[in-house]
Length: 247
Image 1 (cartoon, rainbow, N blue to C red):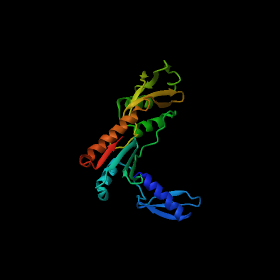
Image 2 (image 1 turned 135 degrees about the horizontal axis):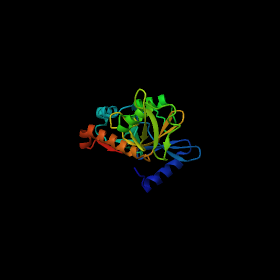
Image 3 (image 1 turned 90 degrees about the horizontal axis):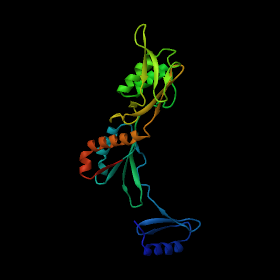
Image 4 (image 1 turned 45 degrees about the vertical axis):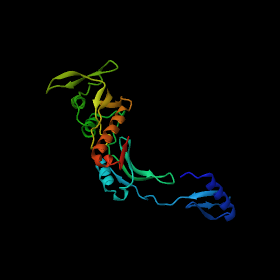
């Protein structure tokens, strides 16, 4: 609520009359006068003290549906990042928004741009990435590398060709494609994990690494997936205007 000129003038008069170290009331609001004579609006501490924290999108949905005391107010569900969703209320008369719920996705710590040995990379691809065609190809290459393979690799600067075991006593050359399409677990589990391009590189010692190569475009796709999930599961609340989902 903006103060009119009359209100400002009245506030000034009362502050002079009251003196320093006093509290005055103007138009239902309270103001404190400090030792220097400066006037400060006293804002009531009537916002929620504890923000509810969850780790899933369904946790957000369930909490929004259960906030009976907020049924007469607009609630805003904002997708702030692929791993973070915040629910907050409308602006109060002091220009504040009350934060009610925050969701933080539980995602693995993936070693991008770091060379790992054969076993570490094999475990990482199986445990931290969804199944894709290129993931299976990388697993085949990594799991069957010969010790001398990477030292003798043919490298054109884009793709590498390495020697892998293709049978009990036979070997064959395989060209590893680049870029590769991989889908790491990097957003909420309830939505599809975006597939994006990575550069896969190998070096001596049977070590390999993956490097992100999509310029962060996956984040926009992930946030869109999260918004679609919330919109679908809060359809009734959105139709009544009680909930607004933004990303």
